[in-house]
Length: 199
Image (cartoon, rainbow, N blue to C red; front, side, top):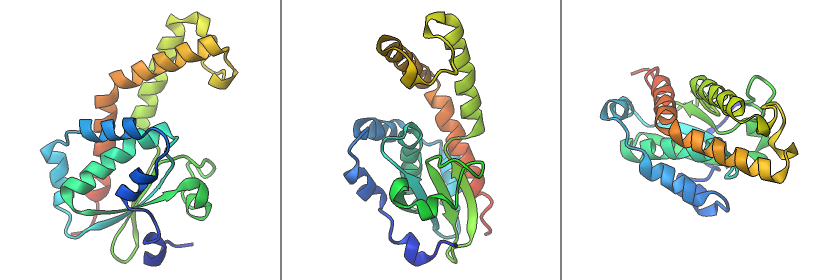
C-alpha cells in the first residue's frame, strides 16, 4: 500500500513527537544539542532543489531512535529542506510492515524519503551497517575483558541483576566513546540518500 500525501500528513511534526515523549527526553535533547553538522554535509541538504518529505517510524523507548532521530531533526531545522512526519511504530503497523528490516524485523527508526509526488527516494533503517559492526566488535572486546559477564549471546534480561547493571553501564560507556563516529556515519548515510534526488 503506497504512502499518500493524506496519510503522511497524519503524522506528528518533530516538535509534537518531542512533546509527547514519556521516556529518554533528556538524552534525546542532549543528542540534538551536541550535533554540530559539518558545513559540507549540510550543503548537500541545502542544495536540494525542493523540500523532501520524510516519513519517520519511531518510539521513545528505542536507543537507535534516541541516537538518530535528533540528527535528522537538526538537519531538517538547519536546512529547511526536510518535511518530517513521525508515526509511532506500535500504533501504525500498516506503515511499519511496509518497511521491515530484512523483510521480518520491525526495526526502528525508519526514515523514508519521498519526493513531492510521494515517489520513494530512499530508506534509512535503524542504523548504518558500520555502526552495527563497530558496536559488535566493541561488545566482543568487552565480554573478553570481563568473563564474569558470561556469553555475549545471553539476552541481557536473563543476567543476574548486578551483572545486568554492570553490562548496561559498560555498554553505555562504549556507545559514548564511539558517538562521534556513529553520528558521522548516520549523517553520511542520510546525505547519500538526498544526493540521489534528481535536480
